[in-house]
Image (cartoon, rainbow, N blue to C red):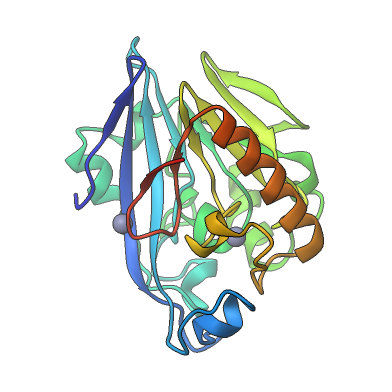
Length: 247
Ligand SMILES: [Zn+2]
Ligand SMILES: [Zn+2]
């Protein structure tokens, strides 16, 4: 377990490092092209892929995102599968059956694929899987067939901002995908792909080439980061090398 947990307001937030590596050839571009205008290097971007485990004072467990998944997952065309989520959870003393809530920040293959195992069955059998309606409405291809369809009875579809477990709220932050959501618990915000690279903290207008709607994503990023900065929140980031950033 390469990253340390953070404890805030009686809630423990543990980063689970699912993988580290550059994107595969299918979608690989230099960083300078991934984040136009940010002045980044003409080198591949080496990403961490983080999920986060939230353990509240009563011991309830919420998992935010499920990573890149098994060897044959929808992320296998471009991400360093298989992910290490199962081992990371075990290192945190948690069995998948202990997780009561899974929150999927969005339905990209590196965030949701690990909800289903190599056998095609759900991994977190006792968990509601919270996702936004707007992402479910547009998901297709392998993500629908290999992830959403097997999860069917475990899906908990929400629209907009809502409390999904005691003290755990989701906030719709559309742009990266139509139904992208971030998670707030205490002073922590688990940000999914609201921000992909630290350059976007300095300038939220820096676009990310794989945002679905770059203009909306930039506006959402500026608004959400402004609110989080005013709240002096700690960001729990999916792809930064350091999972926690104090704004
Ligand atoms: Zn990491
Ligand atoms: Zn994404």
